[in-house]
Image 1 (cartoon, rainbow, N blue to C red):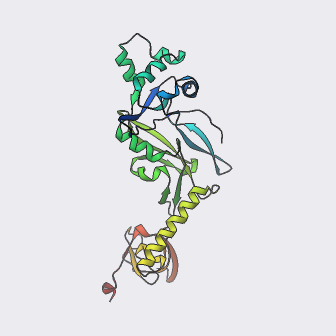
Image 2 (cartoon, one colour):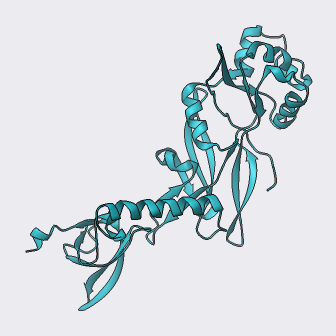
Image 3 (cartoon, rainbow, N blue to C red):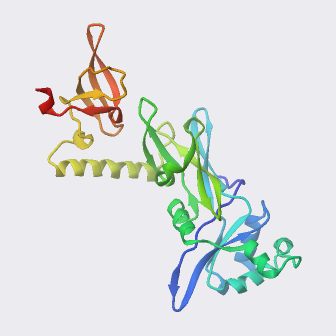
Length: 291
C-alpha cells in the first residue's frame, strides 16, 4: 500500500488515569501538506517524556482498475496531527520551536487565542466516534453487500454504525460520504468501500464467518433451521407489500438468509414462475388466516 496524500482527521481524546495525572488527545492544527513532517519532528526531536504518542490518522481509500478495487492509504482531513499527552502546556511551548508551525503560532495574536486555534483538546463525544472507526490509527474499508434488487443487506466495517449519516453511497466507485459533527461543525468524511467483486480481505472474511455462525447458533437455539432466522421458511405464504403482485398470495419455495431474499411461486399468464424478492418487501401470512 502506498501512503499518498489528501486530508487528515482527528483521532480522539482518550482519558486514562495514570497516578493522579490525566492523559488526553489533542489536535495540532498545522499547514496542509506538512502533517507528516510535523509528526516526524515531534517523534524525533521533542522530549519523549512530554507525550505518549504522536501520529497522523489515515483511511483506506479505494480506486477501481478493470472493475476490481485497489486500496491506497490517505490522510483523513487536511492539516491535523494528533498527540497524546498529560503535559499540554509544555508540549505547546515545544511546538512553537518548529519553524513552519511557528508561523501559525506567531505573536500577532493573544497567546491564549493562538493556543485555542492550533492546539485543540478532543471532546469525549468525538473520542467515542473516532475510536469506533479507527484501528491502529487507520480507518479500514467498509464491506457493502447488496441483494439482487440493489438494496444494501449488510455492512461490515467502520461505516456500519453510521449508516444514518450517509449522504452519498457510490459502490461502483467504491466510496461513501457521511456527514459527521466534528470540532463544532458538520464535516464530510469519505469511507472507502469494498464489495464481493473485490479480492478477499482476511478480517472481512472472518467477520462474515462469525456472523454466519451467530445466525446458525441463534436458529439452533430455537430448534429451527438456519432459514428460520428471517421468520420465513419454504412452505410459508406471503404477500408483497410493495403492491407489485396485487393481493396475490405467494408460496415461498426458497430462502437465502445471507442475502435476505426469498424465492416465491407467482402465477403469471397462466404459468407458475419462480420470482426472487427481498424479505423486507414481503409480509408473512399467519397460518390461521389461510384457513
